[in-house]
Amino acid sequence: MGGQRITLLGAPLDLLSMSETVARAEAAMQSGQRLQQVVINVAKLVHMRSDADLRRDVMESDIINIDGMGVLWAVRLLGYKAPERVAGIDLMMALIASCARRDFKPYFLGARLDVLEAAMSRLRAEHPGLTIAGYRNGYFGVEDEAEVVADIHASGAHCLFVAISSPLKERFLHQYRDQLGVPYLMGVGGSLDVVSGRVSRAPLWMRQLGFEWLYRLCQEPRRMWRRYLVTNTIFFFLLLGELARTWLSGKRQ
Image 1 (cartoon, rainbow, N blue to C red):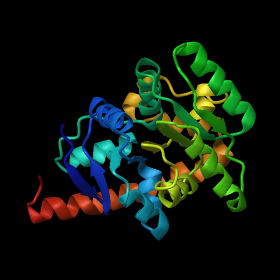
Image 2 (cartoon, rainbow, N blue to C red):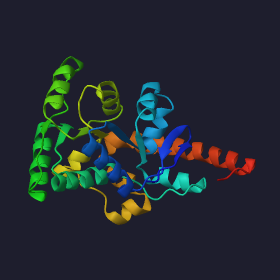
Image 3 (cartoon, rainbow, N blue to C red):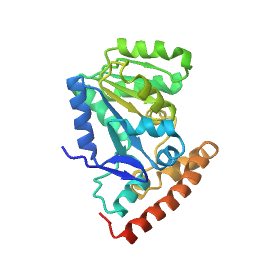
């Protein structure tokens, strides 16, 4: 399988398609060999530059996919042949369908309990063959983490989806990945809010044009304005500098 690893503004990225990523995840779940996956969007890439722990947690992951359209466009502008974005929620849903077909069991960690239970109901309705290893809300303290890890380990899960915001989910997965006993590990942020129906996702045309961030901003302006407006502006100027350096050096890929 393909998967060239490149570096964009100091962040490593694997140029994998959705199908290639799913295949690697399925292979890990089948073999039992641990595989930690993370996706990078504009906000995370910018925050990695000032958060050393987040940077370490991302860089030491096994697969680092391109999530945001801004990152995908940047990679292509720099001359790399990136096949597509691998949005976290789309990857999660593809893997849940795979779990139902292949009798793999997912565990879900994060979100409010009511959101989590609504999401579980929807997933069971859409995938009658799905066996859920377990789930737990994301409202726990550091003092509870050992108990959470033990519950996940005892569940016999083949994959773990952590629906907690960054950088907390990256820290949790990096810190406990060798104790969880789960082959495939993935952070999914607010994906369960979408699955539950609490948050609606942008129409496909907006996602394809790279305006999904604007749709989210309109839904939750107080919570999302800084993430999108500030980090998008920083990313824009960082990318301009990188493009200038690349083109002036004559080393465009």
